[in-house]
Length: 338
Image (tube, rainbow, N blue to C red; front, side):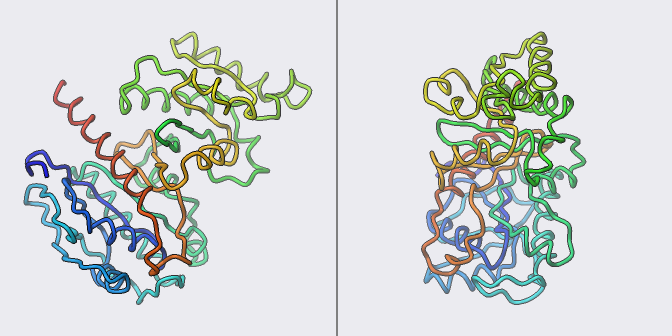
């Protein structure tokens, strides 16, 4: 393991307590870590899930005044937040919805205060939070609101494909109205800047999907490409961006076309993400671009049926931690150069 002077400190929220998040965190702890992962959660929940999985677990309470320390095998560093009610693996409870948001709030604060260098999130259950009477459309929107960020972009990435979205968690019927000149323009600006600064890509090439089948077929299948998307692409090309499109989504995701781009911009959630998840489900990372903090997440849901069974796969969480640490180290290097 690396010397602790170089260790990062990364906040980690296990998400829905009845889901697989706690399992993933406890399982991951068995491998140790060269960085200090600060798990924002109820320590009793983690011990309970470790017992269910038959895994050893030692908990060290987070000390913000100490330097970041690597984690030994079977060890976690925990910033304690108490559950509102006891949690049973696989059984949702609206009583714990406020707890889930409390862990998120605490983790965001750790990042904002500079105590942690990135945030990694395990899945929450949007339905049970809304059932508890708390409006919640997703991590991405919640983080934007809490950090007062006017524009964030959701991007999922595998080892060989990056897909960003103009719209995220919207009913399909509301998508066309959300494909506005301002939305497409600002999404592309955030994406382009992140590719340059967080991924060290010089003059990144972005492949842009049309909204309609066949990218509108010259206006016969819809005019959003002609009236909105193409004029924005032309405007940003004049400012130096390399943008290819609007392209029909059904042929954009072919190997030949993908080889010509560094990232894809899809117009809506189910236009781009099914392709990405079919290529790398369980190994993909959800990255929120545009925030003042680094945030990555898993590419899957709470998998209530797998909670407490020992069958949950840590692949996506490992990839999310790897991406977060790479981005944090890149940010350190950038700060050192300034």
